Amino acid sequence: MNEPRLGLAAHSARRRAELVRAAYELVTTRGYRAIGVDDIVLRAGVSHGTFYNYFANKRDILDAVLDHCFDVIRERLIGEDAIPASLDEFRARFGRIVDRCYDLVAGEPGLVNFLLFEAASIDDQVIERVMHNAQIDGAAAAQEVGLGIEHGYLDPRLDTRIAGEVMLSVLMSALLAAVHSGSVGLTRERVRTQLTDFLARALGVEP
Image 1 (spheres, rainbow, N blue to C red):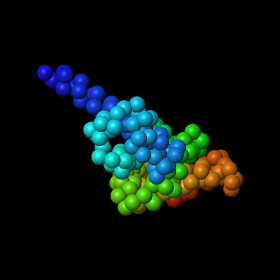
Image 2 (cartoon, helix red, strand yellow):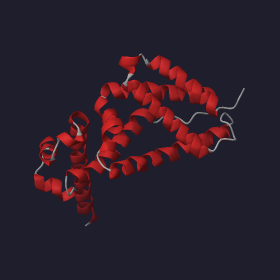
Image 3 (cartoon, rainbow, N blue to C red):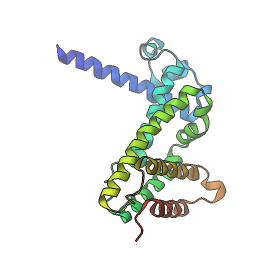
């Protein structure tokens, strides 16, 4: 009895993910305002009825697309790196993240452009969704700061929440630098050095 239900649940989750992925691809290549439900179902290869089994309208699927955007960023930028055990490892890890920012912008420029430049102009609910995801990432960054303090390479006087927000702000700076690198000379080497030096000085224990 349970196996058929599990099979249906897995199929339903897979179909919903296919719709979200199709909407994500369209939003990040053509822009949210330029697409409709017709485009999404065509890209996903499903009927309108299937779409409306999961989402009420184009705006309804946008929240899932935003969450997917953040999932992609987390996977592509943070990955499965081990938590650093020293300040040198901390710098090296963030340096790799900066490199991944440039790789992400090169590989999926529409993702970063959508989140940074289009999403906030859609409606207030988008801003709330973005802030919700940012809070999740902020909590994860604060936890990492706490571990750095425990290991002795980050300043024990730090407020972990504020320091986590600083790390996210620096990450945002890396993404913006990657977007504008061709026009203002913000090469990944220059940005990597400047941002990792800044974080080490701002958060690290003085030698």
